[in-house]
Length: 353
Ligand SMILES: Cc1cc2nc3c(=O)[nH]c(=O)nc-3n(C[C@H](O)[C@H](O)[C@H](O)COP(=O)(O)OP(=O)(O)OC[C@H]3O[C@@H](n4cnc5c(N)ncnc54)[C@H](O)[C@@H]3O)c2cc1C
Image (cartoon, rainbow, N blue to C red; front, side, top):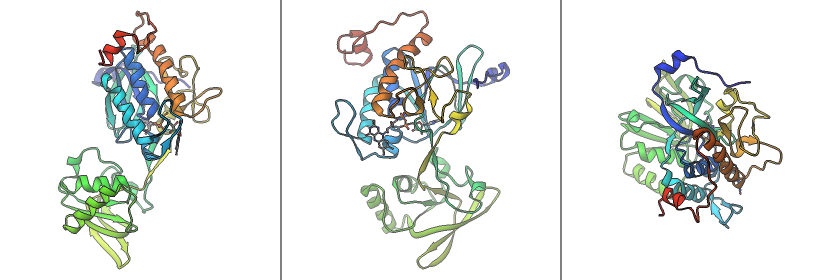
């Protein structure tokens, strides 16, 4: 398969963000790619479907200790992410959270055109696919006909809080996302009902405490039970049926946010025309480049003989990828190998000189 080339008419209409590099995925490897590219003066935009950085580390195991990141004998998934965010600060990457890159094609001028599901468009000289196991996709609640409401009145993430102002909102779930959004949306909602199947929450204790205070103050309604049906027309929700220990309750609502966890699916990566092997992107081990010149793949998404799906492997891959990317972004510049300890120009970029 080959990457699609965009039709010239389409290239004239859009006003994309122009940048050196777009990194798809803000997991640990995507974040470290910002650093390695930044040292070589390559500016990056980073896009992730999640609403925060860290990929698997923050989504799947934020509090679990990792023991095999060099020089950090023990570090949690969240702490590693926070440290990476600190380390890449000097390079001022632009993050686009809550957006999934759906389209990737080549422009006739050789650059890459990318478009997210939120409509953000990019033109980049190089692309770094750091998509891990693929996009995190929300689990759909087992409710008949829920698909018809998705994106109109049933949402699995909140892009703009303002869109929720004045609405009668039902939030379903007991984890961090459900509790965070209960706390964030309560001030703008007309009414907010939190539904969870048991009176025990997996979310951070301080969020649970705050939620309980809002319930005690009559600002949030807490129902222990399960949503069994939704009603509405033309994608607009009007009510939800909740089965509680006391019976069946029908509550009026015009927005529902179910937070039933996430699964990882390869997603749009499969549609971009890149060669794939068992849902992974084959790369060479010198440049970590895919079947398309200028598109690199690092971290869990790539494959090569001897590949180990470890964070430290992705860090190494990011360093070599950046060297290769430099040749494309600055074809006329010779790249000098330098150490951060001794190069005053690198130290200047890092803001330490
Ligand atoms: C429970 C557990 C424990 C682990 N323990 C260790 C350990 O001790 N040591 C170790 O080295 N490794 C460990 N790992 C593996 C490690 O987490 C992964 O190797 C690492 O997260 C890979 O990083 P990544 O940046 O390649 O991808 P990920 O962390 O998977 O991040 C990829 C990101 O890309 C985003 N994305 C994908 N497609 C798109 C798209 N089209 N548009 C926008 N965004 C997209 C995803 O939403 C995701 O946030 C562990 C993994 C798990 C699950």
